[in-house]
Image 1: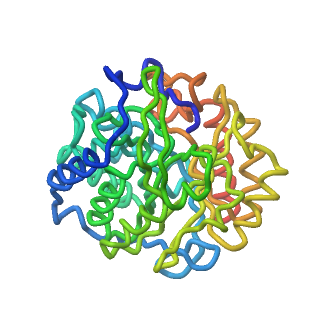
Image 2: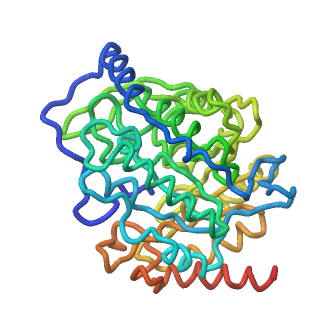
Image 3: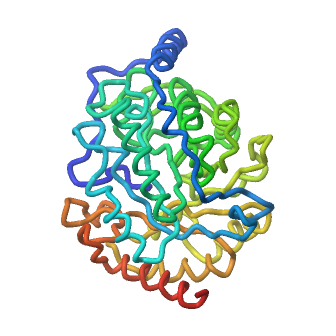
Length: 377
């Protein structure tokens, strides 16, 4: 999501000084990172469901077209950094059944690079974090849902992944995706969203990586990014054929040159990840029709996030019917409860509590998905 603060009181962690990350430091940290990864063979269990790219569509194990309609389950990107929790709120089967009652078929799970790898002093990381994510994926899939695993928060070198940087980092992000792909490569019911919301300025940087900077504690941190091609290569190096979602520039709202700079994928399983918010770019029918609709004719498009400030529904009730007409998937941001501290002024929330009582925005999504279910049932 484009709003930098995810919830009230959440802030980037402070650092005592800002430095340029040297190549030697990056190399040493990469070696350290590789040494901390331990994978359980039981994490590599296959899902009964399957999803893959075929032409401009996602299809299931029977070759039938699948449109992903669901919710983002935020929490695992931030709780682990400073608390002994992985999720914000419940993550058991009962909580998933509450989401399913909204007629969803997919859940997007934002993740934290440092927590998965167990580096940079996060409170809950490594095996503990990975096992809980694997367990949650199994729970979602056991109840018939597709799962999108999203690299949401990352940071280079010794910096803690406590907020959203402009682009994936070369120090840890390829290692994250190699580990993630090795863990889930035999599970064909998942998709990987390679980097949540790039907000670098250059399409060549987006594809191939570059030096960029991030403002932290009043100064700039310069670091080497990992381009989308490097992240695709990291996944494919493990043998995983998982569909890969790639968001464009401007917080994944600018897809104008996506096709021109599309990375090479030997498995031809790339998906456009598009984010649209009432307060962001490409937030009107004109942009959707001139940029997104032509893309959807040649490549699957998944709206990994959408929503409206103030948790209202005018924008969403305009976007969803448009997406339906053009075969575009959409995932609502976010399944986090306002009574647990989520503030609608900081970003859209679908629910008032974890019993599933919807906000106005949530009512719009819930009723629309119910209507779709009735029309196709």
